[in-house]
Each structure stands twice: as structure tokens, then as C-alpha cells.
Image (cartoon, rainbow, N blue to C red; front, side, top):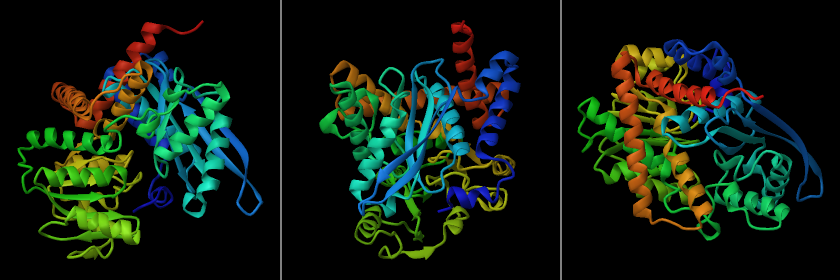
Length: 424
């Protein structure tokens, strides 16, 4: 897996500058009002916090955390919390902007936000992670809330992290506030279907994209970079559809089998050893090799910037489905477009997670919960409609799906901004 730090060495511009450049392209195509353009180009709020946490040995370590709200025109801010040693303010700003467009593409009444703590969770005990999470939550409590800013899991955070955050805010309020986070355990107001939601949304988009390129997904060759919450679900669900998973990877490397990797064997290997490498009846390849495999669909579901100008030329897939946020640099995007590769952009492709997070928030507010079948049916309708809307814009303006998705999203947020007006 290419980490954020690795990817940055290949980028001439920062992640936030890349995000702004993509916004600018859409704004130009829409001939966006320059006043609105100025509002949407920058985050509304940037909070940086430095807070002490007691380690298990009694020492005190000061951590740095962020919470960025990009836009609130269409509703409360919404976005995940990531724990990573290489996370930067620039990265969090870029991801917050992406969340604004993602929510708008799928017509969810949210704005975009993102949060992070600079740390290495793999070197921390469970108790240290809990103390850090609760203190970080307290520091950003001036922003988050069920009516203002709703957090969710992201890289290196999970349902337990959300439970700690929800409990911390609830202790401050004196009563339970389940709607302050999504991605919680079912026992405290979580939603059915949330764990697989992002991967399921990726699969729904791949099914729609396959129709455009006339690809029969039965026995289609699939390579998935990343085997976490998104990649793991994507692999399992595509395998159930009859696809052939020829390669899958995690941070330790990738494994390949020409006639298909068995997902259950890969999962067992990872659970027992912490690595996919060594999965029975597979051979080891590098993550870079995985990107260049002869396959029908490539799913980058790891971190940002893995498809770059120096490797995009080797991509042979007919479809690239962006399960991760920002896996393709603008330079690589242009190369893939010239090669005729259909790229399903991240703000559409991986929006299944935030969609079911919205379902969870609604259920918490109603105090009435839906069945898994209801949730998956609603998710399919929303993802299919969003893909169709994006494809329609692409046809009407003769642009690729990414630019179409940005035009759709930016147009909706701009309309909300103009309708609301500028206070005071």
C-alpha cells in the first residue's frame, strides 16, 4: 500500500490544491458565480487542537488533532475521523471538501467535514486509544453535535471509537446523544448494513459502469488494492456475484491467483497472521504489480494517491472504481482518460458509507430502526440514481464521469448557497 507520505513524493501539488483544482474545473464548466466560487473554494472552519494524554507508563504525550468543516449550506457537516501518523491539515481539508461533493452527488442533506489525530494507533494500547479518543472528542466538542457536525469512522477508527466519542458527548450533556456519530455498534443506536455500506456502494457503481462498457461481470477479473472495511466488503460481494478476484492486497503486500483468490481463505490468513501474504494457493506480488494486472476492474480501496503519473500508464483495467478517497492524482486521471479507462470517481463510487450513515442518523432521530433488507434496497436506489445522474451530465456535456460528478455536486451546493444568501 502506498501511504500518504509515499504518495506525496510523487505529487507536484498538495492534496488540497488537487481538490481545489478539480473544483475549479467544475466551476469553470458551470460558469459559476465568482462570489459563490470564492465561498466554496475554502473550508468554512478549521480547528486544530493540541491535547495531553496519559500513556500506560504514566508519561504524558501531547497529540495534535484536527476537525475541518468545509461547507454547511445543505445541512449539518458530516465526515469521518482518521488516526494516522502521517495525516496532515492539508489532507484533512481536502477530504472535508470531498465530503461536501460526495453528499451532494447522492442528494444527502449534509455538508462536508473531516477529522484526524496524528498518531500511530498500532503502537497504542486499547486504554491509551480510549483516553486519546475521549480527550480529542472533548476538544472538538465545540463543533460536533447531532444538529451541527456528525462524525464517523475512517482510517484506523471503528465502531468502538465511535462508541467512546458518543459516550463522551453524552456524559457532557447528561443524556444519551446517539446522533452525534454514525458507524456505532448496533447496541447503542448503530444501523444494520453500515459495516458493508461503502463496499456495497462500490459494487452497485461497478454494476452500473459495467453496463456502460458492456462488461459481463460474471467471471470478470477483479483486482482490489486494500482489504480493510471497504476492500474486504467489495471483494466478498463481487465474489458472490460470480466475479473472479485475481488479486487483493493489504499493507504487507498483494496476493495473486489467475483463476481467482478465495476470499474466505484470504480473510482467514489475514485474521490469523495479520497479513494476506501466504494465503493458500496464491503467489505474492507487490501493490504496484497489482495496479498493472491484466484485469477488467481495478478497485483502489486503500489510501490517497496510489495511481500517479509514473504508474497510471500501466493500468490495463477497463474500469477503475475508486473505493478510497483521492486514489488518483489529476495527472494520472488525464492518462487514464486518454487510455479509454472508465473511472468511477470517489465522490460517487464510495458514497455508500455516508449514505448509510445518513440512514443511521435518521433512525437515531426517529428512534425507529429499519431492517437490513430495507437499508440495502434504499442504498441501491440512491447509488443507482446518483450514477445515472452523473452519467447523464457526462453525456450532455461530453465529459468524463469525474468532471460530471463534480459539476452535479458543485451545482447543487452552489444553488443551496445562493438560495440561502450571505449572512448578514
